[in-house]
Image (cartoon, rainbow, N blue to C red; front, side, top):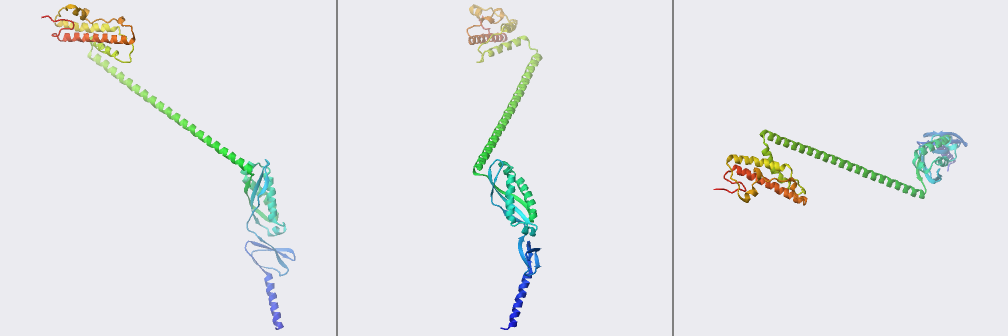
Length: 366
């Protein structure tokens, strides 16, 4: 082979190699740290870049996008001496590629250890209950410490989140019992409140019912009393308007007496003292009318002596002659006497109205 051709091929290969070593294409969101003879020279930005072949080389390639780092669960002791396992999630971003490459050997390990140390300091000042309910406070304190420490490493911590807090199994069981007791307590309280409200509403309903029934009874009694008052007033006006004399009133009085003893509830009945006077008034009234019409023959026999009332009246009832056997006997005897008196008065009235019919206890003469 011709030596000229060989030299030409070698020269072409060298040119291609030198060109490839000179050109560096950096992708978006990437940063390349360039060293010249082992010393940091510059950081290549995204796009087409040129370097000195052989003299310059790429030391580190860094991704400047926001990264997510999840640490393994780490045991942490709380203030009340309970060991809990806490798992954290870290969101960070490289802001200075040179510092991230030359200020710390492994920034991920450094961030992990710093997170664990800070977390133990923060959790050590809290009890378990406060730890479980103060995640926002823990996150803010962790972020403040990590952001301040990682600033010189060219890293910005955007957010730190507590992913899980895992207490021991015995503590979990105790917490479940506590929560169950709290729920039972709330259920009992709600049930008691419901029963209390139900009893209050029932009492209010009963009270309103009693009030309405009392008001209804009151209105009924008032209306009944008004009706009776108006009835009495009308009777009184009718009596005075018709100018009723004492004879009519005495007759009505005698008609009412038998009804007083007819009730089944009466066990004792007293004959009024005015009964004899009323009978005399009625008898004398009808006796005077019969005498004025035509003279009556004198009664004859023992029947006339027994049946004809003395002084033109009915047999007098002695108020003190009631049989004092018992209340029922006295009531029956009084009723019979009152009925007999009324019957005699009616007979006298009929005899006075009809002259052809002889009075009771008398015999007709031819």
